Length: 279
Image (cartoon, rainbow, N blue to C red; front, side, top):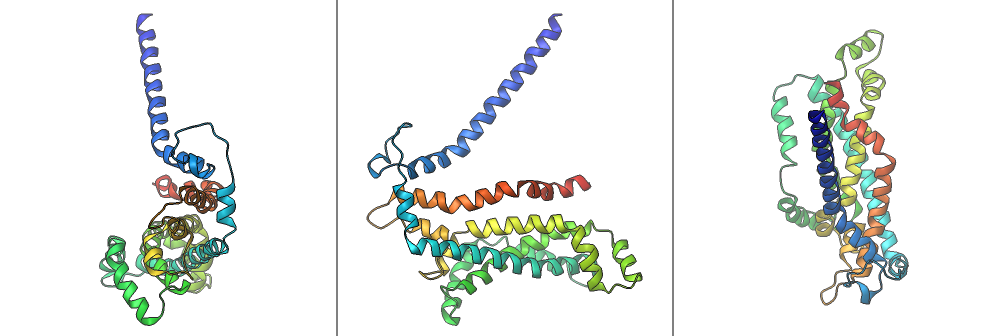
Protein backbone atom coordinates (compact mmCIF):
# COMPACT_ATOMS: atom_id res chain seq x y z
CA UNK A 1 0.00 0.00 0.00
CA UNK A 2 2.79 2.33 0.97
CA UNK A 3 4.88 1.60 -2.12
CA UNK A 4 2.10 2.47 -4.67
CA UNK A 5 1.53 5.74 -2.83
CA UNK A 6 5.22 6.55 -3.03
CA UNK A 7 5.19 5.73 -6.74
CA UNK A 8 2.22 8.03 -7.34
CA UNK A 9 3.96 10.77 -5.34
CA UNK A 10 7.11 10.41 -7.49
CA UNK A 11 5.04 10.59 -10.69
CA UNK A 12 3.20 13.66 -9.41
CA UNK A 13 6.49 15.32 -8.45
CA UNK A 14 7.97 14.64 -11.92
CA UNK A 15 4.90 16.10 -13.59
CA UNK A 16 5.08 19.16 -11.36
CA UNK A 17 8.76 19.55 -12.22
CA UNK A 18 7.97 19.30 -15.95
CA UNK A 19 5.25 21.96 -15.62
CA UNK A 20 7.64 24.27 -13.77
CA UNK A 21 10.28 23.81 -16.47
CA UNK A 22 7.75 24.44 -19.23
CA UNK A 23 6.57 27.64 -17.56
CA UNK A 24 10.19 28.73 -17.07
CA UNK A 25 11.04 28.14 -20.75
CA UNK A 26 7.90 29.96 -21.87
CA UNK A 27 8.77 32.93 -19.68
CA UNK A 28 12.37 33.05 -20.93
CA UNK A 29 11.39 32.94 -24.60
CA UNK A 30 8.21 34.98 -24.56
CA UNK A 31 9.05 37.69 -22.05
CA UNK A 32 10.95 39.78 -24.66
CA UNK A 33 8.06 39.33 -27.10
CA UNK A 34 5.59 40.37 -24.42
CA UNK A 35 7.72 43.43 -23.62
CA UNK A 36 7.81 44.47 -27.29
CA UNK A 37 4.05 44.05 -27.70
CA UNK A 38 3.05 46.03 -24.59
CA UNK A 39 5.62 48.75 -25.37
CA UNK A 40 3.99 49.18 -28.78
CA UNK A 41 0.78 50.16 -26.97
CA UNK A 42 2.39 52.59 -24.53
CA UNK A 43 2.73 56.35 -24.65
CA UNK A 44 6.28 57.66 -24.97
CA UNK A 45 6.59 58.62 -21.30
CA UNK A 46 5.49 55.15 -20.13
CA UNK A 47 7.98 53.08 -22.11
CA UNK A 48 10.45 52.62 -19.27
CA UNK A 49 7.86 52.17 -16.55
CA UNK A 50 7.52 48.56 -15.39
CA UNK A 51 3.75 48.63 -15.10
CA UNK A 52 1.45 45.87 -16.26
CA UNK A 53 -1.65 48.03 -16.02
CA UNK A 54 -1.69 51.15 -18.21
CA UNK A 55 -3.95 52.96 -20.63
CA UNK A 56 -3.12 51.49 -24.07
CA UNK A 57 -2.82 53.61 -27.18
CA UNK A 58 -2.61 52.79 -30.87
CA UNK A 59 -0.89 56.05 -31.77
CA UNK A 60 2.40 54.25 -32.41
CA UNK A 61 0.73 51.95 -34.95
CA UNK A 62 -1.02 54.88 -36.63
CA UNK A 63 2.26 56.76 -36.94
CA UNK A 64 4.01 53.77 -38.49
CA UNK A 65 1.19 52.85 -40.86
CA UNK A 66 0.66 56.40 -42.11
CA UNK A 67 4.21 56.42 -43.42
CA UNK A 68 3.99 55.48 -47.09
CA UNK A 69 7.58 54.28 -47.02
CA UNK A 70 6.78 51.59 -44.42
CA UNK A 71 4.05 50.17 -46.65
CA UNK A 72 6.51 50.11 -49.52
CA UNK A 73 9.00 48.18 -47.36
CA UNK A 74 6.28 45.61 -46.73
CA UNK A 75 5.86 45.24 -50.47
CA UNK A 76 9.63 44.91 -50.93
CA UNK A 77 9.84 42.14 -48.32
CA UNK A 78 6.92 40.30 -49.89
CA UNK A 79 8.39 40.46 -53.41
CA UNK A 80 11.93 39.55 -52.36
CA UNK A 81 10.81 36.66 -50.12
CA UNK A 82 8.40 35.20 -52.68
CA UNK A 83 10.57 35.48 -55.80
CA UNK A 84 13.81 34.32 -54.14
CA UNK A 85 12.02 31.32 -52.62
CA UNK A 86 10.55 30.40 -56.00
CA UNK A 87 13.92 30.73 -57.76
CA UNK A 88 15.70 28.70 -55.07
CA UNK A 89 13.15 25.91 -55.54
CA UNK A 90 13.31 26.03 -59.36
CA UNK A 91 17.12 25.72 -59.25
CA UNK A 92 17.44 23.59 -56.13
CA UNK A 93 14.98 20.82 -56.97
CA UNK A 94 16.59 19.76 -60.29
CA UNK A 95 20.01 20.09 -58.68
CA UNK A 96 18.98 17.81 -55.80
CA UNK A 97 17.48 15.37 -58.27
CA UNK A 98 20.69 15.28 -60.32
CA UNK A 99 22.82 14.74 -57.22
CA UNK A 100 20.65 11.78 -56.18
CA UNK A 101 19.81 10.11 -59.47
CA UNK A 102 22.93 10.63 -61.61
CA UNK A 103 26.17 9.00 -60.52
CA UNK A 104 28.65 11.45 -62.02
CA UNK A 105 32.19 11.91 -60.81
CA UNK A 106 32.69 14.39 -57.97
CA UNK A 107 29.05 14.25 -56.91
CA UNK A 108 29.80 14.08 -53.20
CA UNK A 109 32.38 16.86 -53.43
CA UNK A 110 29.86 19.04 -55.24
CA UNK A 111 27.25 18.28 -52.57
CA UNK A 112 29.64 19.25 -49.81
CA UNK A 113 30.70 22.41 -51.62
CA UNK A 114 27.04 23.47 -51.89
CA UNK A 115 26.54 22.79 -48.18
CA UNK A 116 29.72 24.68 -47.28
CA UNK A 117 28.21 27.85 -48.75
CA UNK A 118 25.92 27.96 -45.70
CA UNK A 119 28.88 27.60 -43.33
CA UNK A 120 30.33 30.98 -44.30
CA UNK A 121 29.23 33.78 -41.95
CA UNK A 122 27.12 36.26 -43.94
CA UNK A 123 29.20 39.23 -42.80
CA UNK A 124 32.24 37.72 -44.59
CA UNK A 125 30.57 37.96 -48.01
CA UNK A 126 28.37 41.00 -47.37
CA UNK A 127 31.12 43.55 -48.04
CA UNK A 128 32.37 41.89 -51.29
CA UNK A 129 28.78 41.72 -52.53
CA UNK A 130 28.33 45.37 -51.60
CA UNK A 131 31.35 46.36 -53.71
CA UNK A 132 30.27 44.16 -56.65
CA UNK A 133 26.69 45.42 -56.58
CA UNK A 134 27.91 49.01 -56.52
CA UNK A 135 30.01 48.25 -59.60
CA UNK A 136 27.34 46.52 -61.67
CA UNK A 137 24.38 48.64 -60.54
CA UNK A 138 22.56 46.09 -58.37
CA UNK A 139 22.97 48.06 -55.16
CA UNK A 140 19.64 49.17 -53.68
CA UNK A 141 17.61 47.09 -56.13
CA UNK A 142 15.13 44.29 -55.53
CA UNK A 143 16.92 42.27 -58.22
CA UNK A 144 20.15 42.32 -56.26
CA UNK A 145 18.43 41.23 -53.06
CA UNK A 146 16.57 38.44 -54.86
CA UNK A 147 19.84 37.12 -56.28
CA UNK A 148 21.52 37.21 -52.88
CA UNK A 149 18.66 35.44 -51.11
CA UNK A 150 18.34 32.84 -53.87
CA UNK A 151 22.02 32.06 -53.36
CA UNK A 152 21.49 32.14 -49.60
CA UNK A 153 18.62 29.61 -49.69
CA UNK A 154 19.95 27.32 -52.41
CA UNK A 155 22.18 25.09 -50.19
CA UNK A 156 19.33 24.67 -47.73
CA UNK A 157 16.90 23.71 -50.51
CA UNK A 158 19.33 21.24 -52.08
CA UNK A 159 20.20 19.45 -48.87
CA UNK A 160 16.68 19.21 -47.49
CA UNK A 161 15.19 18.03 -50.80
CA UNK A 162 17.94 15.45 -51.23
CA UNK A 163 16.40 13.47 -48.38
CA UNK A 164 12.89 13.63 -49.81
CA UNK A 165 13.96 12.68 -53.35
CA UNK A 166 16.07 9.84 -51.96
CA UNK A 167 12.92 8.40 -50.39
CA UNK A 168 11.16 8.25 -53.77
CA UNK A 169 11.70 4.71 -55.13
CA UNK A 170 13.62 4.90 -58.38
CA UNK A 171 11.56 1.92 -59.59
CA UNK A 172 8.50 4.20 -59.82
CA UNK A 173 10.31 6.54 -62.21
CA UNK A 174 11.63 3.59 -64.24
CA UNK A 175 8.12 2.14 -64.48
CA UNK A 176 6.82 5.50 -65.72
CA UNK A 177 9.56 5.67 -68.37
CA UNK A 178 8.80 2.11 -69.49
CA UNK A 179 5.20 3.24 -69.94
CA UNK A 180 6.36 5.96 -72.32
CA UNK A 181 7.25 8.91 -70.07
CA UNK A 182 10.41 10.85 -70.69
CA UNK A 183 12.80 11.58 -67.82
CA UNK A 184 11.25 15.03 -67.49
CA UNK A 185 7.69 13.62 -67.45
CA UNK A 186 8.65 11.05 -64.82
CA UNK A 187 10.13 13.83 -62.73
CA UNK A 188 7.03 15.97 -63.16
CA UNK A 189 4.35 13.31 -62.65
CA UNK A 190 6.06 10.94 -60.20
CA UNK A 191 8.88 12.53 -58.22
CA UNK A 192 7.42 16.00 -57.69
CA UNK A 193 4.00 14.84 -56.38
CA UNK A 194 5.61 12.35 -53.98
CA UNK A 195 8.10 14.98 -52.76
CA UNK A 196 5.47 17.69 -52.49
CA UNK A 197 5.47 17.68 -48.68
CA UNK A 198 9.18 18.39 -48.67
CA UNK A 199 8.90 21.07 -51.35
CA UNK A 200 6.17 22.90 -49.43
CA UNK A 201 8.13 22.64 -46.17
CA UNK A 202 11.30 24.01 -47.74
CA UNK A 203 9.36 26.81 -49.42
CA UNK A 204 7.80 27.86 -46.10
CA UNK A 205 11.15 27.87 -44.28
CA UNK A 206 12.91 29.75 -47.09
CA UNK A 207 10.19 32.40 -47.12
CA UNK A 208 10.50 32.86 -43.35
CA UNK A 209 14.33 33.00 -43.49
CA UNK A 210 14.27 35.71 -46.16
CA UNK A 211 11.52 37.74 -44.49
CA UNK A 212 13.48 37.82 -41.22
CA UNK A 213 16.94 38.32 -42.72
CA UNK A 214 18.58 41.57 -41.66
CA UNK A 215 22.30 41.78 -42.46
CA UNK A 216 22.23 41.59 -46.28
CA UNK A 217 19.18 43.84 -46.39
CA UNK A 218 21.00 46.40 -44.26
CA UNK A 219 24.26 46.35 -46.23
CA UNK A 220 22.90 46.00 -49.78
CA UNK A 221 19.90 48.35 -49.75
CA UNK A 222 19.28 52.05 -49.58
CA UNK A 223 15.94 53.83 -49.46
CA UNK A 224 14.36 52.23 -52.57
CA UNK A 225 14.68 48.51 -51.86
CA UNK A 226 14.76 48.52 -48.06
CA UNK A 227 12.93 45.62 -46.45
CA UNK A 228 10.65 45.71 -43.46
CA UNK A 229 13.27 44.38 -41.00
CA UNK A 230 15.63 47.21 -41.86
CA UNK A 231 12.71 49.64 -41.65
CA UNK A 232 12.26 48.63 -37.99
CA UNK A 233 15.92 49.38 -37.36
CA UNK A 234 15.55 52.83 -38.93
CA UNK A 235 13.58 54.02 -35.90
CA UNK A 236 16.83 53.84 -33.96
CA UNK A 237 18.37 57.25 -34.60
CA UNK A 238 21.76 58.68 -33.67
CA UNK A 239 20.42 60.97 -30.96
CA UNK A 240 17.19 59.23 -30.00
CA UNK A 241 15.54 55.83 -30.12
CA UNK A 242 11.80 55.89 -30.75
CA UNK A 243 11.02 52.83 -28.65
CA UNK A 244 7.25 53.01 -29.05
CA UNK A 245 7.44 53.38 -32.84
CA UNK A 246 10.12 50.73 -33.14
CA UNK A 247 8.10 48.23 -31.11
CA UNK A 248 4.96 49.00 -33.12
CA UNK A 249 6.93 48.51 -36.35
CA UNK A 250 8.34 45.23 -34.94
CA UNK A 251 4.86 43.95 -34.21
CA UNK A 252 3.65 44.94 -37.68
CA UNK A 253 6.69 43.34 -39.32
CA UNK A 254 6.32 40.11 -37.33
CA UNK A 255 2.55 39.76 -37.55
CA UNK A 256 2.31 38.47 -41.16
CA UNK A 257 5.00 35.83 -40.64
CA UNK A 258 3.52 34.71 -37.29
CA UNK A 259 0.06 34.37 -38.84
CA UNK A 260 1.59 32.60 -41.83
CA UNK A 261 3.42 30.19 -39.49
CA UNK A 262 0.22 29.42 -37.58
CA UNK A 263 -1.70 28.78 -40.81
CA UNK A 264 0.90 26.41 -42.25
CA UNK A 265 2.02 24.79 -38.98
CA UNK A 266 0.47 21.42 -39.88
CA UNK A 267 2.27 21.28 -43.23
CA UNK A 268 5.49 22.43 -41.56
CA UNK A 269 5.39 19.79 -38.82
CA UNK A 270 4.37 17.14 -41.32
CA UNK A 271 7.30 17.99 -43.58
CA UNK A 272 9.87 18.22 -40.80
CA UNK A 273 8.87 14.84 -39.35
CA UNK A 274 8.42 13.11 -42.70
CA UNK A 275 11.95 11.71 -42.80
CA UNK A 276 11.76 10.46 -39.22
CA UNK A 277 8.49 8.67 -39.89
CA UNK A 278 9.91 7.05 -42.99
CA UNK A 279 12.74 5.65 -40.91
